[in-house]
Image 1 (cartoon, helix red, strand yellow):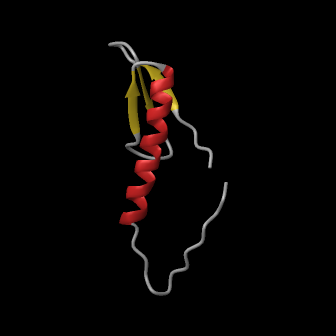
Image 2: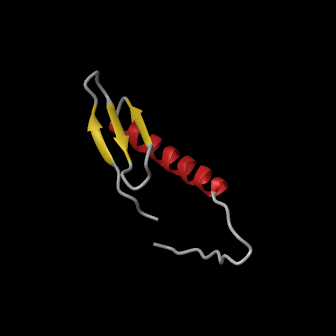
Length: 67
């Protein structure tokens, strides 16, 4: 899966990043490498929580789609 993130330069130094497609999915880091690694963790965590909160009805069908 590929997802776009925006990395910003923080006023106090370092970087912060957000994932527009995942509301509230943000992270920070002192270096580009650190913020990129933190983005991976933040996205995985966001998706894990979203999957746990998802409720289904007996008539619903669950499918997985690779993008």
